[in-house]
Amino acid sequence: MNIKLDIKSIVIIFLLVISILFFSLWFLKGTGYKKEFRLLEQEFKSLQRTRDSLVKVNLKLKGDFDETQKSIDERNKKILQIESQLNKSKAQLNKANGELSRNKKDLEDTKKKIENLKKNPIKREGEDLLNSLKEKLK
Image (cartoon, rainbow, N blue to C red):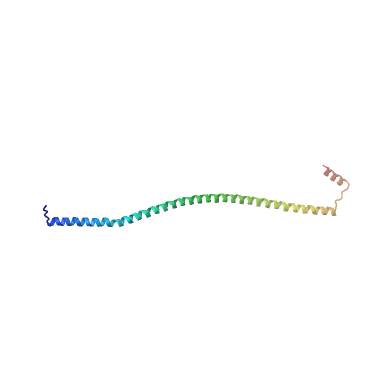
């Protein structure tokens, strides 16, 4: 087997060998990138799990917030009702105080009249006495 190699064939073989060599080096060196890619994929998956857990926590917190807001609204309604009842009670108290002061004044006036009548009794005679008795007996 006699292989004649001319310069052209040698250059082609040399270029082929160099190409295979560079491709092999690139492919073997590419494993570092593959490792980095795997690490990035793992980090991405970890970040996705973290995000998903945060979304769940966020939904739970939103539900808790809604419940708390609802209870706050209910309490505010109760407070408004109590305040309106308090205002009504204050108005009734003021009215009762007014009536009480009028009654006290009337009582004092009546006591003064009684004292005045005890000191200076009305003396009725004759026709006046008869008319007074008729009025009281009606």
